Amino acid sequence: MLHVIVHTPADTLAALEAAEETGVHPILHSSAVAAQSLGAGYFLAMIEDARRRHPSAQCLAVLDCGTACGLALAALRGGVEAVSLDAPPAVLAKIADVAAQTGACLAPTIPDDALDLRNHPDPLAACRASFTGTGRDPRASVIEPPQND
Image (cartoon, rainbow, N blue to C red; front, side, top):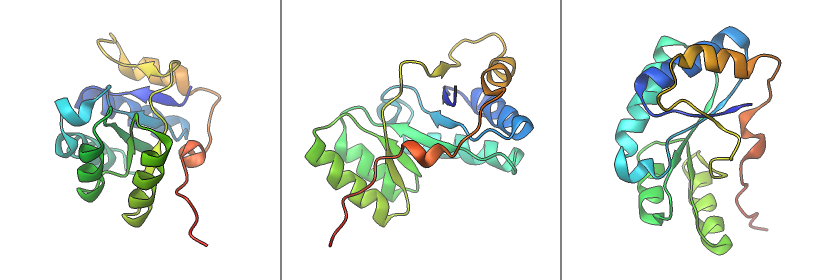
């Protein structure tokens, strides 16, 4: 499993430590609608701190924006590298275009089989177990912006 839901700085550190150890490039998802509860700035700071502590770990960090298109746009402009959004296809295409313009991307919503670290007694062990034997580019599941020909 490459999708991990992180809720706290400790979760994020555990996921990136396991990624660094195993060479796996996970997709780290915020909790559902975290753009509204945590905010883009907090999520970004949490990810940046973990990346500073585990510089060789690679991941894609996705902020879940629920149905809030405005929060998704603000997060992209604020430096978040990926957002997920529950919106009609036409809206998703426009958000994907804006994301591409900022060097970011639109990612799928949290999959049902994601490893959720909420209240996990040992997030590092859970990530290590989940990452063993896996590894692929996390951007492979990114929604591409429309091509302007």
